[in-house]
Length: 332
Image 1: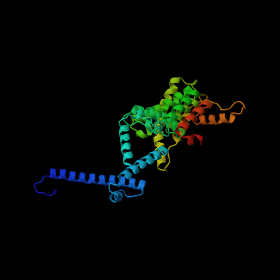
Image 2: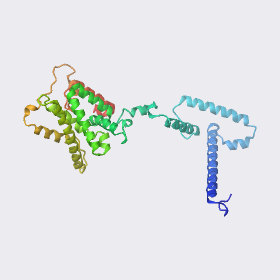
Image 3: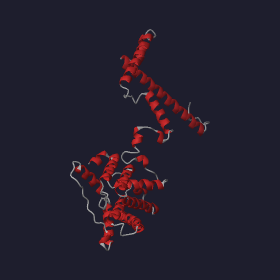
Image 4: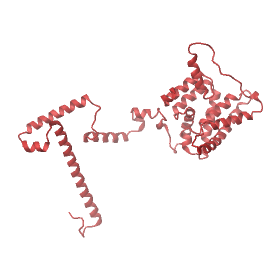
């Protein structure tokens, strides 16, 4: 049918053009299917299907059926011996994969029991536990846990949970101050409109974790009322946020990250502000005994000292948390 007839409207032209295109597509699909079937027949019999049919006519029909049955049997044996080998170009496989993907799209994420999906909740940065901007409260909680892990370069909330548990094993006061400082830093940053990526990935809170631990470890709770100690931690959380953003902007011009410079600057100011060193805690870390496990204890105690802790069990929990995120990093 010609599309340039003067009495045909524009909408009718579009309809006819679409029908013509559909006919071309159907013809191409038919040719592809015919070519695919001929290829399979040639692979199984060593002959061209069309030529074989022309030369033999209907007399070879029984032989063709026999070959088809033999080919199907051989294909079944091949699939049973090599079940993991699939031809991605096989139309049957393509249809099955399309149906599988359609089915998976209708199933909630939490009910997809695949190994990859489970690992996305645990391994690496645990991407399935990241929250978007529509969930600010969950972002702050997730970012606070990730902040504990970021101290040892692990952007993983489960790592942070293990480390926080180690804090409580070592000292509940140190754990409370670290958690409070990191949490308040993220809250202040969220209220002030700081980029959410810094909060979610724990990049603002990891220096606050160290500042809270430093305040609880270096200043004596016996010299100050508890509420003053916690108030100083809240104030320090706002100060460390400002220092972190400032240092990060300055070092960014040199292509460097802030690292723990904000923690060092903040703790130096706090310790210099103590007008009497009797308010500071004077302690030394040591290992008692000479048993055969002393080197192993020293290793885990050294790991805990990263967070200004002095506990072998805390070091073990920190190491386990690092293993969850990265086995290579933990061993290194």
